[in-house]
Length: 102
Image (cartoon, rainbow, N blue to C red; front, top):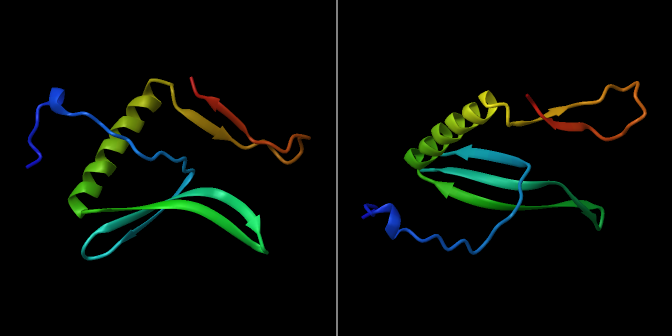
């Protein structure tokens, strides 16, 4: 059913979104991942957080985890991964530093 030649595959991405946080839940049937846009927007006294939920089989989730791990290890070892370095409290800047590690 999923056998195809790479040249026969044509992606049709109909929706894109940004996520800087994910919440993962595992049940006996599947895995669900909530991709969230934090911190959200304050409206009517509540923080409204946009997100998308994706359900995956255990096998598909395991494949995703393995692929992400290998890819992130490679990008990190190549020195191309953006890293987060918090600025210490005694500085005057309120924004964290983000840079590529080399």
